[in-house]
Length: 394
Image (cartoon, helix red, strand yellow):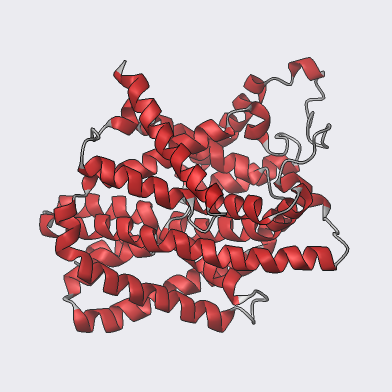
């Protein structure tokens, strides 16, 4: 019975977050509310292993992360992925702005070890937080372990609403642009919101099987095969497996091996997304009010410096890279949390800002690839490099 109770509690927190987001028209993101509920729960009555008891443990996440990234590749064309090089540059340069301000002004205010231990999660979210806590434990620097975890918790509190505001501002501009230009919707935009309800050009792909054989299991086997191949290749080329899952997902869709929006058509996308999000929030069980209270001042100052560095880099580079500064700043802010929060925030804004499905698809078409690719560049790639370097600096 405890497993069913755990599942209900986890999904109830997700539900409350979604309802608050809908009531506030996404001014308060669902991930922010859910994160706060998990934090309070872990600090009071929730068992530390409640997410694992709800079936969302390490084994589940190891499977669903790769499959979700392959799925996201089926939402983009190869041309679209390559076209997002500007978003990659903006995101990485935003991270550079954070590093510059924190390592200069930050080290004038706090000691070197505090700054070095706290910065990686600010530029890589939960990935860097996990890498830093594991590395600090291995080095015996137990006094510093609370810094990366607390940074992850607190910068999310500011990062989610700030990113939501930037995307809302960009969303209003895009809605006006869409309607002023005669509501022209690119063909690729329909796929971004899974609007093609009929047979799409990749529904049978290279197999040309009758409709009765196009089952959910058939889709899942192919998505898992692409995920497995991506992880296998990653071991040879030493490129982050998450990045390869996205790339090979795009290629598999391009050549007809996978249909558009594969996991939605298999009926399991939301289940996997909720599970991944729950696992991310389970990392909050490593904190306590006492831990956060003792270092909150340092964390807030470093967050302010980091966000200012991102803003300055984004504001200066937005025009040369052909973006509004709001969109450029949102791309940089993906380094705070990465996937799946970047996907959820963007989807949430598109859904609540749009008046119909066409407007929603237009918003997703223009914002989602930038946010996803920016998040992969920072959290999946740069965060691993930064955390590895900073562990050697302590």
